[in-house]
Length: 217
Ligand code: G6P
Ligand code: MG
Picture 1 (cartoon, rainbow, N blue to C red):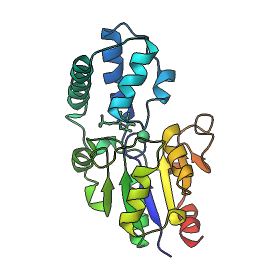
Picture 2: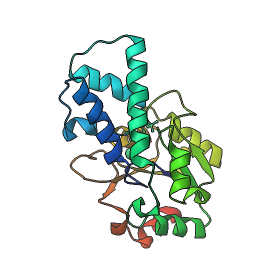
Picture 3: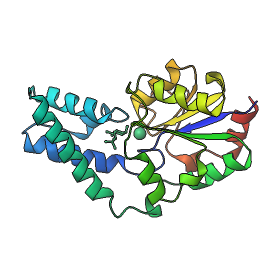
């Protein structure tokens, strides 16, 4: 039967995780909160609002709704300035080739991202046309590890959860895929993405025969 290949965006398709980190670090610095790359793993895959809560928690900072709104806007403006000139050179290794292969095989392709900036980013890097379905931060209410974003994507593709395959670089995203009963594939370090069914440092290490096996099983 047809499979659903669901891709996370930040850190899987494009190298934007570093820009999210830079923008959060700038905000944390301005609030005198110590925020390191290790802390950042916890932020990957989770929503903008939840990310701010985690950072404020690190510094035991309490804030009014108004302050939080101001900081969220500030973070996003900084982030948007970092990605303004982004182009196809920031597509991660072998992602385009992988999308082409899956498309040729007639399988479903979806985006499952927490980001509200997902569509303009896919447009900027010229990958939008590969996606049959896009579910992003504008469509869901529950942040990963809640499986809402992936469940919605597979439903829109008309594929059951057990026929869905999720590519993720975040711990929260791997957990979301597992909770949904989907096949989780980590893109990144195995020591971080321990709960992933399979893990590859990037798509260059995943050959087409592996994807063919996923389609057949
Ligand atoms: C993704 C990223 C997070 C980011 C979140 C919200 O999950 O991994 O780092 O905070 O999306 O993105 P947004 O572009 O809406 O702020
Ligand atoms: Mg990600």
